[in-house]
Length: 287
Figure 1: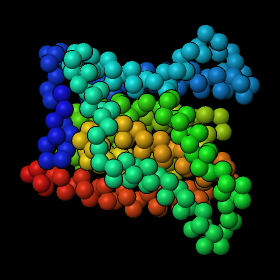
Figure 2 (figure 1 turned 90 degrees about the vertical axis):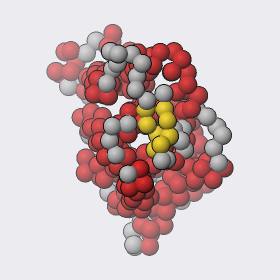
Figure 3 (figure 1 turned 180 degrees about the vertical axis):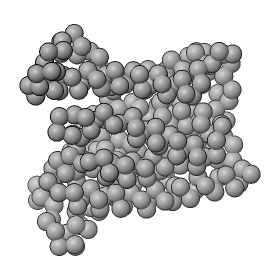
Figure 4 (figure 1 turned 90 degrees about the horizontal axis):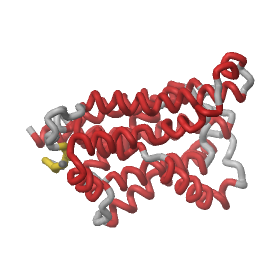
């Protein structure tokens, strides 16, 4: 169901004449996930003793919270089965989780988030600000491994975004445009987190989130194409960013400052701009 054309992974037409289009897929993913997000928000405000939330909250809503985590995955599985059948879905999974990639690809994916996150505190210190808490250094690798394993299990959204949606978009749009659309969709998808009591759990506002998500989205899009459609390597990259940034405690919820997150964002734009340039060049090659 996927072909690699000039280094870009594109989806082949669905066999089902009544196929679920990419817009329908996005609607389904948002409907499932935001239903779960609604349950999480209602429960959170009820726990914070908001009277309006307590009046509506029912413990029977609690299982809906799982949709917040697994909504995109369920939407992707549904779209795959509907559009391509069991055989096409199995071929998708074999490509998505293949392991026969070059060693440099695995090392790069493992190293990039670690190096960027580890560079934040030294740069902050050079600027004359507070150094990293001493207790971070001996525990950061263990913390990153534990956090990473947790996210590898519960955060399955890359199967939906880069795995299913991106090849569909790249079959219709240029690589740069397709990745721009998906990055914006991915950004909007996370907006309910900012409606939590006290704002985003990581402590940052919408502006740094936007400037952080954009380069990460393009980097993961470029890596996905360079790896010929490997969702596994993009999944590892995504969770690497999550794990190392939390392990190094660079978010405002840990630091009570926005300096560390903005330094991290500045570093993210280095590979981000390289990824944008690579995706833009693919259009010229394909033309």
